[in-house]
Image (cartoon, rainbow, N blue to C red; front, side):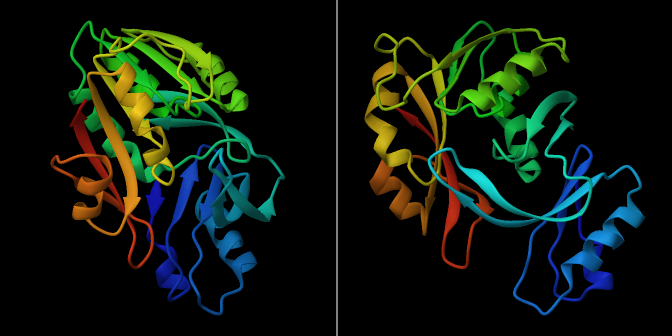
Length: 246
């Protein structure tokens, strides 16, 4: 859940996200007491148990650097998206509710009965959205064992039409045969160029996510296709998404 109401009380402050019982505030360079912001959020949403301030996404595992603001010092919660329930821990995995609509669109790309790879699965946002709605065989893999454990727990919360296998690996060396997957999802925008060759080796088609300044840059880096901007990252950088035939 995303809310824009903070701006009415604290001009210049950006929105916040509600992830289960946790709220995460996205800061802006304005002179604001974010502890007061946190108190206002908890007054508005009595079910919120903790409020954090987002600093940045860091490291190979793409986790959020967070500052605790108010409430209980909890980081784990159950989060609902598109009718799917997820166990998440905001310290160990990257959770971005603003992309829930995009993940629903991914389901439309999947053919019934196909074999799919969610190559950077994290807590299983893409994989579970697909398996919840399509009779597909989905392999969910990641180097982050904490995220994969969360995905395993989440399976018990949901009725799924498809099947999910969970695999830990280093995506530089995918443990799969050539062209075994009908479609793969490469949701690792900052580092995706490093994994292009290996993803294309195991896949007929890949949905790439890339952080760059333009569609032309995406074309030159990953292949010519119809690139769609799905998120603003900074003033001159955006996340683009495109399906590339390998």
